[in-house]
Length: 142
Image 1 (cartoon, helix red, strand yellow):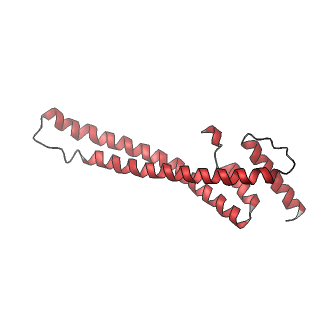
Image 2 (cartoon, helix red, strand yellow):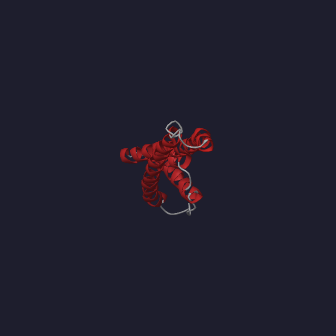
Image 3 (cartoon, one colour):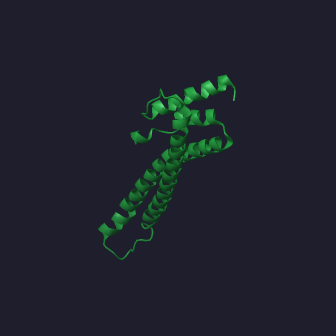
């Protein structure tokens, strides 16, 4: 690693530490940033997979709720039939929209975490740190 490349990597490590609320001015920023980055990538990957699993469950649940309208028993009262025909598809749509929001937030986070993990495995520290600064949200933020 050339001197310029090492300096730029250390600068990115300092920016990463500062973005995560740690002290950026340490003796060897890579020694502090890389374990923290690996831990954050593992956590982000695990949480994104969990969110995507929940979103898949929400989609199935929303479709099930929406399809019950057409499977409603017709021998019930008119109020019950109207309830099934109008409110159940709306409830299913609401659950599907909720799932879409979860997918929209978790999908890119999972892809970014995988790209960072591949960059770390390949030894591309500058790329991994740059992706972490720009692509991963601050864990304390939410």
